[in-house]
Image (cartoon, rainbow, N blue to C red; front, side):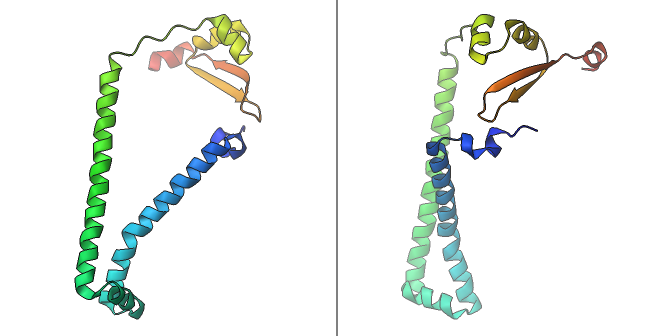
Length: 157
């Protein structure tokens, strides 16, 4: 079986790899930021001495309440910012949908030249419901295998 691009990281650009690593790191840091105060608080209530040290380091119970307020305000602000971004993005996408110009049709000869496949094969593939695409190790198309549905399968659907 041919490897998918997601299973072949050498096909990703260094920028894609770096952005994925930074996104993953920020996610883990966010988890740590969200869970560490709760773990310290639970450990303090259970009488674990190192957690009591961290609570005292934060200023005792009064300091802990101030930090918990800051913690809740930060999470609430992050959630509101995320919700505002989602709302803005949906508004932006809905306002653009009606104004998008229609895409120009691509000719068979242009597709044939771009994919380096015979024009007759591309025309056959356009009329098939299922097409198997074969790739080489660099992610370039090496072959197309059309799978036309037989009459019995078309009658079922």
